[in-house]
Length: 415
Image (tube, rainbow, N blue to C red):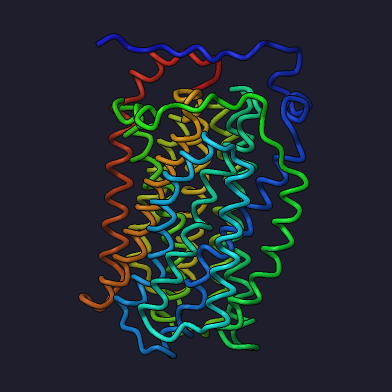
C-alpha cells in the first residue's frame, strides 16, 4: 500500500523557530482563552477525586465504588471527546466550548440544589462532569489552528497546560468541603466557571483556517491508518496515567497513609502541578529533539516510577515517585500532541477527539483498577504494576514505529 506523504510545510520566515516568531505566528487572546477554559473545565472534571473521601463517608461507599465514582467523569469525558471533535469541525471550537461549559454549569448547579444522596447520584454527576473533560478536544484545536507546524508543540502545550486546573481542585475542594460541606462545593464551582465563560466568549476567536465540514463517515477515516491507533495508544498511557492519578491520589493518600483529606489534597496538588507544569515544556522539548525521542524517555521513566510506587514503604518515597511519574507523563502529553498535527493536520479536530478519548479511557482504567485492586487485594500495588507494564508496552510500540515515521512523514518539523 502506498504511503501517503503529507507536506504541511509552513512558509519560512526569519523568525519561524524563535520565541518572537511563535507569538507573532498565532492569536494570543485565543491561546489565553483556550487555556482558561481548559483550566477551569479540568478543575471540575476531577472534582469528585478530592471530595471522594468525604463523599464516601457520607454515602458509605466501598473502595471499588469510590474508584468507579472518580473514574466515571474520566470515561464520559473520553467518549464525549469524540462527539466534541465532530462538533468542533462542524460549528467551530468557540461555539462548541460555549455549549459544553453551559451544560457543566447547569449540571453542577442542579446537583447543588437537589443534592447528591446515593452512589447512583454520584455516577449521574460524573456523567455531567464528563462534558468538562471533553473540553480537551475543543481547547486544543481552538489554539492550534492558529499556528504553523513548527510551533504546534508549543501552542498545544500552552493550551494543554490548562490541565493544571486539577491542581486547583486538589488544593481548594477539600478546604471548602471542610468549611461548607462537600455538596456546597458543587455550587461554589459554578462561580469561577461562569466568569471564565464570559472571558472566553469575549477573547476566543476561531481560526480562519477552519477546515470545511465533511460527511459524517469521513471523520473516522483516520482510524483506517495504523498511525492513528499508535498515537491513541501512546496517549492512553501518558494522559491516562496523568488523569487517572489526578483523580485517585487523594483516595490513595488517605487510605494508604491515613492523611486527612486536606493534607492528602496538598500532596495530590503537588504531584498534579508537576505534571501540568511540564506539559508545554514537553511540547517544546518535542519540537527540539523530536516527539519520538521524547516519548521514548517518557515511557522508561514512567514505568520505573509507577513500579516503584507499588513498593514504596513511606509517604516520602511514594510522593517523590509520584512526582517523577507525573513529570514524565506531563512531558509525554505534550510530546504526543507535537506529533498528532504533523500526521493529521487536516483532520486535527477529530484526531484530537479520538486521541483524547484514548487518553480518557486510559485514565478510567487506572482510576477504577486502583479501587478494585484495593478491594480485592487489600493494596493498590497491582493497579500500579499493571499500568507500569502498559508503559513498557508503549515503549516497545514507539521503538517499532519510529523508523517508518521518520522516513514517511515529511512535515518540516522534528519527529
